[in-house]
Length: 90
Image: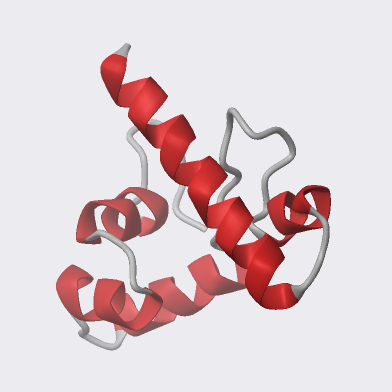
């Protein structure tokens, strides 16, 4: 539970910072953070991003290299672009 509370506090601070820097309401800041609710963060990678990541991977880039491009953990990149068992690769 502590981890979830810690994440919530971080999200709230990020939204406050965005609201101050962008001079917008807190609600708008949460939208800018792509949150439909302050308790849950939506994915920041669009379907187009995932397609581009697949192309980069097919061109020989490592998961770590792709992760650096998107400023994301390599495990997130790996989870998004690898074919799942029982599901055809797109």
